Image 1 (cartoon, rainbow, N blue to C red):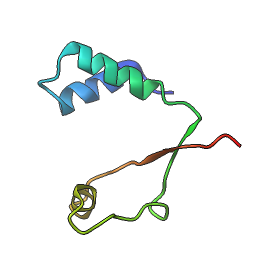
Image 2 (tube, rainbow, N blue to C red):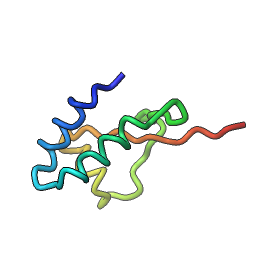
Image 3 (cartoon, helix red, strand yellow):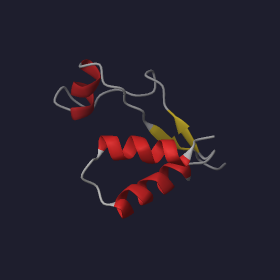
Image 4 (cartoon, helix red, strand yellow):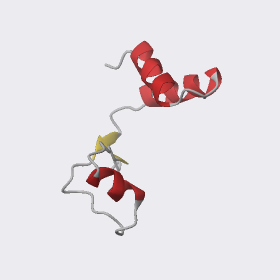
Amino acid sequence: MLDREKVVTVLRRRFPGAANGQVAAAANAILGLDDEWEELTAADVRPCCDACCLTEDSVRGGLIKVLKKRTHD
């Protein structure tokens, strides 16, 4: 379970110029993620191209998490 205050703290550090309402909305969205979303592993994700900003961030050691909404069969 995520602690809302920790999420807000991380968001404020990452986006210092964001308005309170924006931080609150982002925190609500993050905490609202439920079991219908799954994190994809590196084996599930491949870069679209060499110029992709996600590819550049991952090469520089950035942590990228990609979520996929599960289908309801």
